[in-house]
Image (cartoon, rainbow, N blue to C red; front, side, top):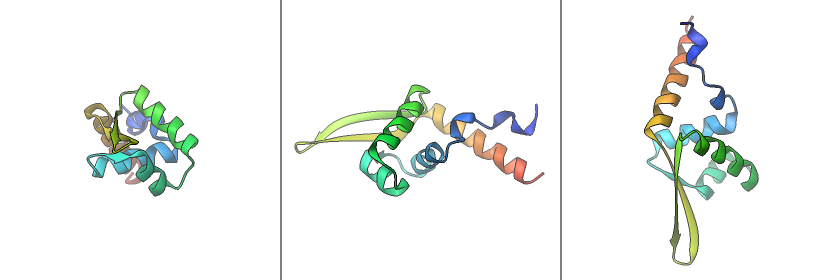
Length: 96
């Protein structure tokens, strides 16, 4: 098995890499917080979140706070494991 076998194409995009990085160090983050930290548009963030959700790398919880809708995102066990493998593979690649 080669060093790059664990590099996950899904994390190639800087926004998905950013989303997962945020969710690895925070229990969860809402849409606005992710948008603010990554400095991207609603549509751009939504499409990348949808991609991660489709792979079951993140979970989505929709709720209302007062009268405002709020969507919380968190990394799933599957997502955390995939991301850790990806980061480990990158580190190994950098250290060769």
